[in-house]
Amino acid sequence: MFDIIIIGGGPAGLTAALYALRANKKVLIIEKSAFGGQMTLSPKIENYPAFESIGGLELADKMLEQVLAKGAEIELAEATEIKNDKIKTVVTPFGEYQAKAVIVSTGVVHRHLGIEREEEFVGRGIYYCAVCDGGYFTGKEVILVGGGNSALQEAVLLSDICKKVTIIQNLPDFTGEAYMASMVRIKPNVNCIFSTVVTHIIGKGEFSGVGIRNTLTGKEGELFADGMFVAIGLVPENKAFENVVPLDKWGYFDIGENCISPTPGIFVAGDCRTKKIRQITTATADGASAALAACDYIDRTAF
Image (cartoon, rainbow, N blue to C red; front, side, top):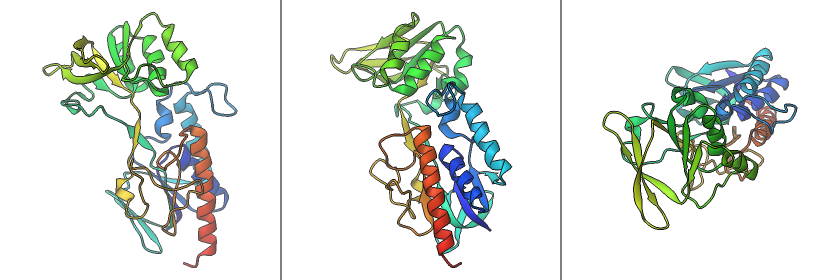
């Protein structure tokens, strides 16, 4: 049995593990895909203290190495349920694990467009991570959907390797930081189409483009490209744990800054909870808060 099981190995979960380990707790981190979470998709991070610039993968590796060196155990699996007894049981497809407390730091995943045939072309023309898959389109033409910081960052990356990048943004302007927007606007091979949405996919067996519609005029058209990247935000994956932690109307854990859930022994950290700002630094802050709260709960509770 563990003192604390942490579900999710992003910056919140890894920071929680670090604080719990420093409090001499036995810790298991369950991660379903890649340690580091969304930050592994960032080619360059320039707003994390102590590093003028660092790649997301490198920062994730450093965080993971630190907790492993302090004795954290890890399990690559998807947690599908938390059984809420005094001793908590976390269920995965490969087994069940018990702990005195659980910290849920499941993070977020990429939002899809939600249009017909989108899923048919995922990985076959439609992608959600330019860092991961942009290399497939070196010297080719791509469409990028989105206008926030993530989209702008991906636009800069793609513009360096692609022949042409066409950005489709549903609003009249970008919503990301002015600095990032200026970086995109100066790229000669980037074309921006505002107040426009993607209506359908064009292609028979192979992606060839999209149908588009101007939201102001209603005018429709077609745009052809070798591939498309979608960067329209992130959504939580918290449904499996709504029996122990309440969700807000957007599916985030409805938990405040103290990261303590209404269920004794269950804590929440990171982008998966209701908050205004979702950054690596705010995730690590949550991780520290959740771990300290969990340690305090364990120390005050008779098991």
